[in-house]
Length: 270
Ligand code: DGL
Image (cartoon, rainbow, N blue to C red):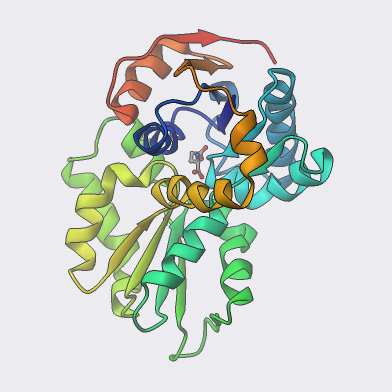
């Protein structure tokens, strides 16, 4: 079974991409709605919460766990991987997003937007630096711009995707990235695919958008090719279970919009 973990229902954008590619697998989705949002929390808290949620999915016998949350991927993935040492396999969304951005960029001008937690962790910067994409904030030749957009998650969750206030805030957040002539922008948050059209409109046709949700689901194909034993172990009865640590009604209502289908959600104690 594949476990997909997120701070709340946002990770359903990742689940949606997985279901599009691999509808045959059995999935259990766990959203830690009781402690969401993770974006403003300290690294220590995100790490502790992520480990607790992953422990729960390990007990559910998941052979593969995807940390769909960018904030948890940035601040806690390594701790989780070190704890479980490959059993089960635990993967995040940052590396696939960076790899896809590097494939797509024309001039190496890569931007990232995400929650405060993602940006302050500098995880995207570290990952891009491994590929020689430098970040020199005071240098005009900077080839990478990183921007925290903390207001976007609450606006999306309030259903204000098409609201003028969201457009105004988005324009304000994206202005420095547009001025820096970003040619590729990583949407480093589970929620941002819902704003993809508006972000594309503001950034213009010379900037390509990389959804970390789509990149993560696309990357799993080559991961399975390299790890056929894991692929063999995963059960394929098309079962789907949606679990939340709190507010199952809100989860079902908003999460259903993220996923694009109605879902039955169960509350669990972890
Ligand atoms: N899931 C989070 C992320 O992708 C966004 C919501 C939150 O802050 O918990 O970073």
